[in-house]
Length: 292
Image: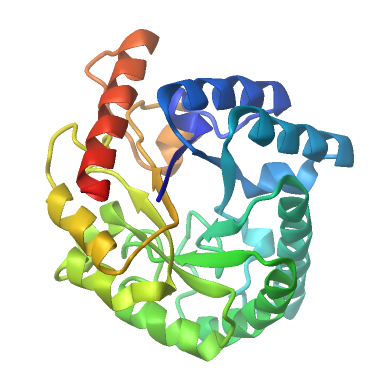
């Protein structure tokens, strides 16, 4: 298992440049992380030189990059507009090519649609048909590059397309690509699954990526709202050996606070040093629960 986190933990912006990626990567390595979740749209806009610099960051700090996408509406693979779907397919193909350069093995997120969803179009059957067709194209490119696309199962307030593991399994069956599998997230599962450990076991070897956070998106172990020992056991039961990435959102304000609906400070007024201590403690806790 590889334990990771993204750059947005310490702030409330999604923005990140090469200099910041290097700085955060150094800190994550010092804390004991071995995976760094980067933003797909950042890779899409990087020059070849910047991608090589990203690759060097991973090598220098011994970090594997996972790539997370919450695509904009103009890249919506489920759109009723075929031009938008085609644009989305080309967008993700370019991201996969950039991932190949930096050595990122996993594209994760709700790439079948756009995020945050505005729910102005909720024809689920049509959305499945449209997005599955394009994911078959994207999956073929991913297969050729040896990259997995892990489709994130979200809760009902963030999507209408994939909201539990069972329907994600059916969806992946219809895509029919060995490169397209499932991302489960403890925050979303806590809302939608009858039993999140059963969902992990149902996913089995189709679980391509795993996001973790408490019921209110605090760091694992901060309030112990979930049965982390049972979650760790379920992961071991399926011999899970891929990414376990924290997605904590403690700070209100900014684009991050708005997009994930953090309307109050969840850090207890923590300064940067205390945020670091929270993270170190959570990583130790998570490794103990997941590795057994």
